[in-house]
Structures are given as C-alpha cells and as structure tokens.
Length: 195
Length: 254
Image (tube, rainbow over all chains, first blue to last red):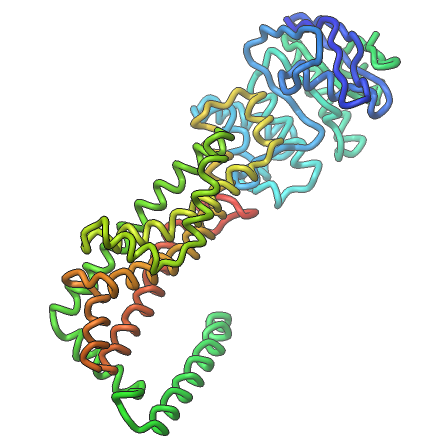
C-alpha cells in the first residue's frame, strides 16, 4: 500500500505540490495527468522516496519497487542484459526472466550491446525490461514511452497491461490513451493539487 | 600493423633526431667527462647490467618506490572515500593536502632525514608525493558519480556492494587511472631524488650520487637512463593492470 497524505513541496518560492493526497493499493493502477511542470514527476519522486516533502507524510509498504524514468538511466559500462541483472541479481532464474522480457519487448538482439550502441527507443525498452524483470509489486512509470513509435508503443502497452494485474502502478503521462490502455484511474492536476 | 607503424614511426623519428643532436653536441664538446656520447653511455649501461649488483640495486630501488606508491594509493583511496562522506574530514584534510602538494620535495627529504631512517625515507617521500594526487583524483571521481544512476540504485534497493561495484568503481576508475598515470612519474622521480640525498645501501640514488662524486659522468648518464627506462616500463605495466578499454570513460567490461 502507498499512501501520500497532505504532501506539500516547494522549490524556493514556487509551490509544486500543495496538500496532495493519494492512496494506491495492491494491483491498483493510477495515472497522474496534467500539463508539463504541474508536479507529476515530483509527486512520483516523493512516492519513490527520492524527494522528501516539505510537509505531509508518505508511507509505502510495497516490498519490490521498480521504476521507469523519463530517461533510461542505464549503466553505460554494462551491456543491456547486465543492466537488468545488476538490479535483479545474476541467478539463472533471474537471467531467464530478463531474457524473456528482452524477447517480449523485441530487443533480444540487443542483450549483449552497450547502451551507447542502442537507439533511444531501445534503451527505454531495456529500462522497461529492467523494471519488469524485477517482478515488482509497485511500479512507477514516468512518461515511459518516449522514443517509441506509435505501433511499438501500442504493443508495449498491451504487453504491460497483461503483465501488471498484480502490480500497483503509478503512471505520469500526458496521454489519456496510455492511461486507458493500462487500465488506470486518472488523477488530474489543478493548481498544484491532484484530484 | 600499419596503424602501429604510423604511430611508432614519428616517435622513433623524433627519438633519432634527439640522439643525433646529443651525438653532435658530444662530438663538439669532445670530452667524455663533460658530455659522453650516446654510444659511450650505452656501453657503460651494458657493462653495468652485466653485474648482479646492478640488478640488486635496481630491484631494491623499484621495491622502495613501488612500496611508497602502493601505500599512498591505498591511503589516498581510503581518504577520498572518507572525505567524500564527511564534510568535516574534507575541511580538515584539504588544506593539509594542499600544503603537501605545494612543498618542495627537497624540504620534505631534509626534514624527514631528521626523523626517519635512510632506508624508509624514499618510501615515505614517494608516498607523500603520490598521496595528494590520488586523493584529489579519486575524490573527484566519487563526487562526479551520476546522481540519476544513484537514484535508480536507490529505487531498486541495490546493496552497498552493488552500488560500489556497478556505479562507484566504474565512475572512479578513469580518475584513478589518470591519478596513477601522473603519480607514477612523480613518485618515481621523488623516490630517486630521496635516494640521492639519503644514499641508502643498494639504491640507484646512491649510485648516481657516487657517480657525481667521482666525476663518472658516463655512469651518471647510464644510471639516469636506467631511471628513465624503468619509469616508462613501470608506468606501462601498472597502467595496463588497471586499464582494459573503458566504455564511456568507465570501468572495463573485458
């Protein structure tokens, strides 16, 4: 269960989040929508424990958290498969699961390549593979489909939707389609508040 | 092969040019006591190398200098880790390192002569020259870790060992290599200078000092040439040990 209660956060003079509250139970999917700069990413960072709110509380008792950030955040000195195994561990079962996700995300041929040898879209899919190979019970997706063409994005969305039934998902997006494809309840941002 | 030749030929050409200049100057001077020719120096070096004493001397000096470099490298890495974790430690240590870096090596040697035995002194002097370089570079490497990768590691709850292995070491390695590259030359020169001033038994420095004392200019050149060749050799070998091609300036994946 993730719960944010009355979370307020300001950067200098600018208040980004104002008394934001939300709750996310196991298997629930929630999308945060709103214009750029409205605080979606900041709220996700609070949920992930990467940002401490100025006031309010964040509690999260999910055990296995994973995230797909706006940028892939891959280790440049590890190949694609090792990027996944760096977080899942190198056990044969983990390796098997990682390779299955490479297959499903149509990047099987990229497993031995280094990030600099991959296109932006392929790097982002490696980042998705890393998150999914964790078999998370809580997944944060921050505009995760950048760099994917329309047809590929639809295939990836369908694939994720089928695989995330047991996973709590918190998605930041500008796209209603993406939110709908992942079966998300939608919270919209208004004046620094999500409702 | 062609690429290697293209790389080696200009260097060999430049080397031959300066050897020719040296030979010409030696011929013009015409006195071995003032300026021996390259041939005379090489002959002297071959004669020296034929004796077991030469190799014992060389290995003893190498041992002293490498001991200093190794100790300073380990200490420099540990101190960098400490000062990057603690602001207070950094505040305390930074001025000390600046003083060590700015003090002439001769001052250290003369001061250390009062406190230390002549056998250990070259080790300490070498270490003192290497320590600030390793500390500064490794500190920069630790401070320069990609914050976004560290956030990713936090989200995925990577262990401390995992972060060290997958993020910190690859981030620091290029800085460490740069430090080692400059520290080796520096340490080697400082170590030999310390030997010249303290003349410990079985040391290149002692042989250089004696050659100077007895006006054995050719032998002085031969020992100096030995120091230069060893410096190049040690630098190549040690850098190869920590080398392996980095990817995007990071750790080896070989």
